[in-house]
Picture (spheres, one colour):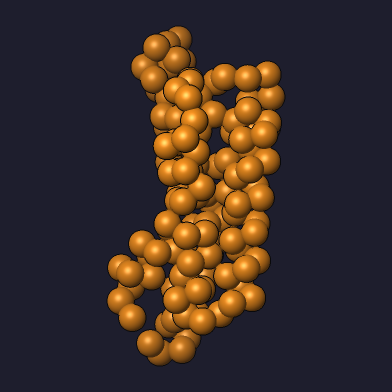
Length: 129
């Protein structure tokens, strides 16, 4: 099984890399954790959109870079991110009263999904596939 297929499917389907490797318990755990964390972030009105230039006005370069890196981390959630992006109304990345907590949970969901893909790669190397 190619590494590119594992990475792409693991990004699109949370924990999907484990599903391709027939590790169903790990798949279920990561799918639940990523989807639940992303759903909690959306429930807390977290912003998942890319920060617009007018929203970054007045920030120094390093802070703007941190906001953009956090947007990439949210993108790593894969399927849940794409679903939210397709079915939600347009809004900024700072909408809502609890956006700090929600946005943090959205970024955590992306990092959990990245952890699942990298863990599956390590397992693949140990198995010699």
